[in-house]
Length: 260
Ligand SMILES: Nc1nc2[nH]c(SCCc3ccc(S(N)(=O)=O)cc3)nc2c(=O)[nH]1
Image (cartoon, rainbow, N blue to C red; front, side, top):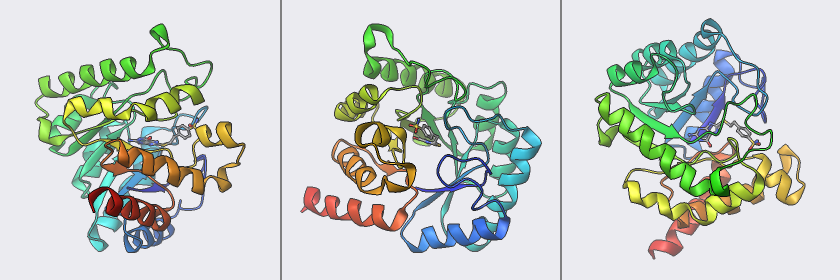
């Protein structure tokens, strides 16, 4: 899954792909590099990010989804929590709703159900504005909290008529988690196999690398590849990354080892 931020303030590539043509060119490049999904996000959900209006998010996302759907043969994912973006993005040709808030906003569950699209449910502790301010978990057991949260969100989707074959789950690395929480979560990632659902992870350029190695955002690729290979080994099916070419090679090499 290639990351396409169409926001001016994204944490690692803010402002580079705001124009529709620049976004389409980047999507084309990621598909050429081997991306099977393009994740289009119009709201930065990095820690401390400013909220974005519905109109702004629609204006950023929908034209880009439309342009990609017209030109490229790739699954388009909507990185959004906004019902109107889910509706308009689906109409424009998106195939997956990737909601970091797991359809908890008013109207989101209904909009996702009505869209017929696949849905990724992701664990987040708090909201982006405050989630990294001393994150904590009952009994300091982040894994149990992620399992409990995802079970609850899966049940909410099933109750709303979103069937299991449309669901993807994600532990939400970096969303209200300390370095220790993120490392523990990756070490035990295979417990999420209990859901028997596709597993998505995204650790590309995130602060867990900065905290562990002291690397700035633009020097986190090697460590990100290591983390994503470990996630593959522990059962991840979809890897969300900025650097598609390098990630595809690392994962294909690891896959060759694992499957002989
Ligand atoms: N399914 C899914 N969708 C995602 N969308 C994003 S945007 C990243 C926002 C961010 C940036 C930086 C940090 S930090 N504090 O770890 O550096 C946290 C969150 N990520 C994910 C992810 O993982 N899954």
